Length: 408
Image (tube, rainbow, N blue to C red; front, side, top):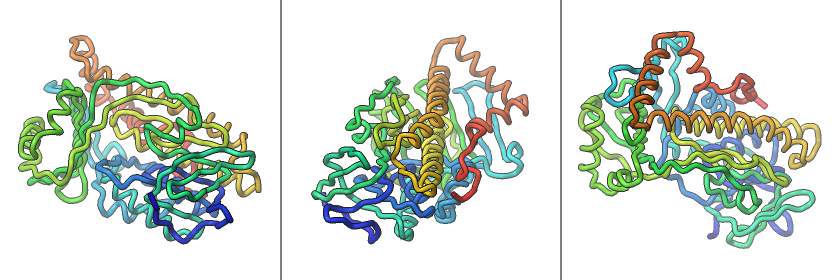
């Protein structure tokens, strides 16, 4: 496939070269490319996929990163501010409620269609002199050499970088080509992702109901629109995806108890099999993994996007520091530091989300009682609620500079 290319990049007799070569320009890969380029690091991003159906849950630390790379204003214009979050377990009267009073009056988070973030990041790349975007373009082969990595595109062009970054998704061909395996647990559940319009305003309220098949999350978007992430067992999900729009909306409305009024479908429905997956290593020879290439988790509390953007922020910080010292950005010391900073957080988050999914999809009486009491206890104890909120929305205490709102 022949790709279109922006005007940046260093040409050579055999193709383009840069300091960092990013395979995959989605939310994580695009944010990384922008962060590096605006700090003066030459970066090439290669992407083959058009924007797909999806939603990004942007925590306050994710917002600060997008502000730092210069795209937040465009993203915010189409994002829905989450001012209240209500978590309930099926028909139980016990629940967890988090509001702006728990965050000092600021929104808890924002939700936005992923294509909006991708578009903003691509526009930002086009405005940066040290960034090159090649898209749509597929990769046919890659290899590492003594001083860098070489990627061959489907049109025959070669692209070179001192550091190769795999940001090409859960089934990352780049990770596979590097011989890095994954530890994976399939859940036999599928998440249905779609967008709806509704007759009643959402008022900035996000809901997550844990049903028998898994969580049903309703995330507010700009205007009277909401993103739906509905988890069910594989067979039930396949049936729901295959329904006509009116039948699907009838099923969805049944679980929403009429809260959003009359529903109207705004786009296709996508089915994503849910897995918890962590790469055995975050690094290889002149290679770093970020985003879903490094870890994939179910859509619980929006942790997938936050986790991926932490990868991008930390790797960008390390690369910029190394580059300014005049050192090789693809050398082993940098990669070892990245591995140390990301491995523990990734594994801990994956285990936590896997445990939450197991607990909240169990039909046994004792787990049901335990989770209902847990929600009620957290809701009743403000200090405990604040602790849980900080862990979900901010992550570990040692935030990278971009997530503190600082420039590199």
